[in-house]
Image 1 (cartoon, helix red, strand yellow):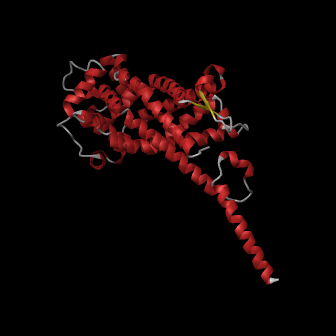
Image 2 (cartoon, helix red, strand yellow):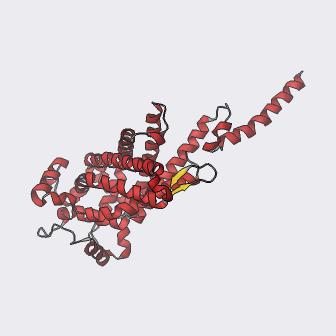
Image 3 (cartoon, rainbow, N blue to C red):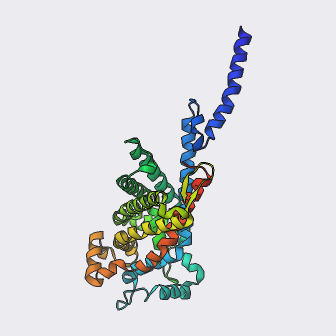
Length: 353
């Protein structure tokens, strides 16, 4: 009897191990073969890690691709604050003139000045952003029994706003450091690198100094990602269903599942990025100025977000809020396009549901 019990235990052991392995590594289409074993937790952990990796890589690739245009945008935004030539509030007469100016002062590689910090910021930022968005949208969709692919624009907007705010607060100090390194003029450097910037900011401004301008940044991040995700998700749903885009879609030969081609991804990404940029750019200009004003102005002359807004309107007019919009819009297509293309590609390669 004792021998029979041992044999039964051993047979159960050899049956359950292959089943667990198959369940842990199953693809979404294999769900019908799933067992009732309690392996949900490891599966969720693996899925979460994949989502974080896809989001982080997508943001990092997009930031590196568009770094030259991003630096131009920031220099246009803050020039009237840092220049000693009050008669020349604009960094350059146009995008090409601005690019020549950067080349003359720092050489070709100076277009990527501060990009190391930008990537360090963007990887966790995008990872958190995409992860929170996907899971929030999934949670909101399940409340009425639908999948996240069928989510309406309102749910996409809420999920995007929530994801943007969480990622913004979590990664803001790196964004501040990146802005300060990017706007330093050749020969007048105040910081010697990322860690030196952190050290000097906390020493002179306290830990709270790392969150200077976080208020206007939230005014940028929340509507930015809310609008971007809403427009992108809605357009994606439309182009996958409408026969007008039939020849631009990709269809899996085995499953028959429809997905977007590179051209459709770029189209939807560019539309979503342009829409969000027009709405949030003035707030972005204000936050950039707040991030660097302590370097160029005495404490008594530093302004709050509202004061910055009023001051720009008074001294430069509405166009002052949109200085740098040209390189920003030029950046939209390659940035959003490369980010969503990378994200969709990695999700497909890693079988992320």
